[in-house]
Length: 535
Image (cartoon, rainbow, N blue to C red; front, side, top):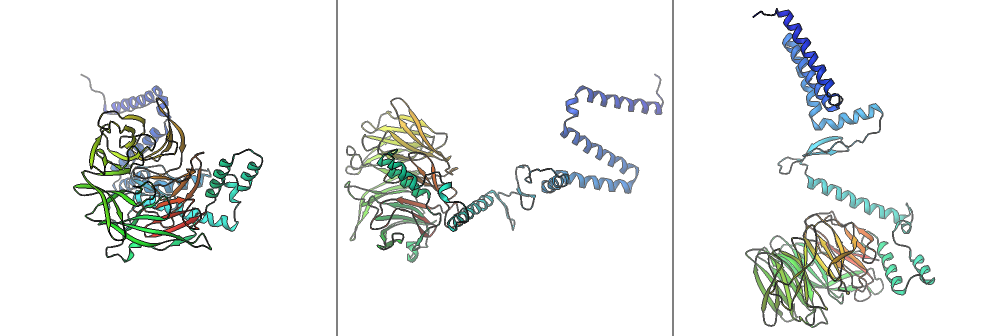
């Protein structure tokens, strides 16, 4: 076998490599025009040139390799990417965005124009996490909304009525005089216009937390409930070690209705053993006045449901029930057919007759119950489940498998309310959706949607005023939002008066017929303070 000379062999091999490279480019011209592939080719060529220079000249080769390493680090380090991109865009004169691309595990600061690493579990002195970024953004949004309202009140911007989605009261009055709207619509639209123009800053700060002088460590306000007459306020103050129930009386100044206050605080109950109050509400046993309190506590090996009334001389307990597992909700029946009945739900759902103490298990299709509500005109109980179903159970035969699935949500249903016309059901889930459903013969259709609620995974309730004009709730971002029930428009967004925190969500109560001379307004409790917003 004849051997090829060495110089001729090298010439043949270089020519063959050039032919292969040309053939690759010609076969797939689209790949040759790909900018990412061309960039990788340049990097490989730069690396090979630096390595060849390193073999030929040791000192110069080391400098080339270090320079190529710096260039490689500059191209792959995400902290330098935002700066280099900004410099290139500013030098080139083209209008490009100063925000970098989203890189998992990194956060791009638009002020410093560089990336920072997100540390979920950290021991650093100045850590950056998603929770910190969300709280910083929420605080900025809160301050901007408060400052914008101050500017509007000072006349620095346009009139608020021109920006509001609701017409002014003068326009509504003109339509009423022309006969275009009825008297009921006139009252409702005037109410919505007043709510839309409510100031975002509280007009009066009420006295601090009622348990300041209590022998336990002071906690935070977690729940507010007003009775039917709007004379008494039920407040739940919770801590890591205990939860206490306080009852206060609403008072108002006769000369100035904006001077709202709560006095005569009484500690009516206290829950220890590291229990968490999951639900609490006023109960009218005699169908006239709200004199009793129904609440559920979860924590420890067993959960508790209790119905009691606090009298001046003693405490009257009507029912105490225990259940293994978590109890998420409890409800009282105002149906005359099912008088003296209550229900509670957790892993299982039960209905209890407090006179005979008979407890009946309900079928919930194998899912946890997160919210319940009784119907007033029919013997029905609606259960909102963790699976996202709303089940109506006929209480005339509760032990049978006779529930009817009304609708399905994509996530867990966390709150249910019935209007006076019980063909309409309002439900909210843990994704932030709040919808009104109309019951029909064979199906349940969405009648209206309320957009703008902020919820990701929490069990957050909503409330309806006594006139069924507005719907209000507190989102996971601690902002209070008020909608019109009839139109579905978002009337008002109230920022929290204090810095937003996921651990201390505000609790609100709104009414147009507070007792005494207090005008319509909203009572907000957050952390250890009460704030009053007047219309």
